[in-house]
Image: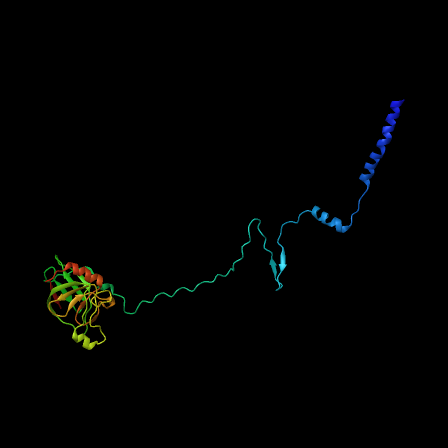
Length: 245
């Protein structure tokens, strides 16, 4: 009897708990919109990725730039690239280009001169250094201008490297602006080498004006390019004959 009473009492005590749970599941709670809206937005599906469009002040649609995670967006460079105007090509000085005809070369030379003789062909602006076997080394030269050309036979009386220049009195009378003395060097009119002809004032020498080779421009001397007169200088000896035609 006592055991039945305790079982009935336990059933009575547990009944409100089960009924409360059932009623709690069935009761609906209504929240105001300002409280519920932030939570509802989080439950909506994410928007598909796309391009957002802003309207520029001019009324033209401008696509928004999409930031890349972990990297700063670089400023956009203008599509048009400023191009610098090309530098003007240097213009060659008129009349200052050497005719390739006057470059040194080995030629056939069947004349009755002993090897080692220098022959100056004044009309054609060539210097020949006679070799054996009917050949000669030919160089282009500048010769005396009209009124200053000459012909004859001389011997090389001296050889000098980077010679000083002392203009003769006759030249100073014509050109009083010339210096009375000029030390040897690249600006010296006698150039890198000089071979003196006898006791005269004439020389075979280099020049600081190589574009004059092939022309009649001197006061009677035979001028050559510096590189050519240095080559000739090493090939001839003091006492060699020089024939000027």
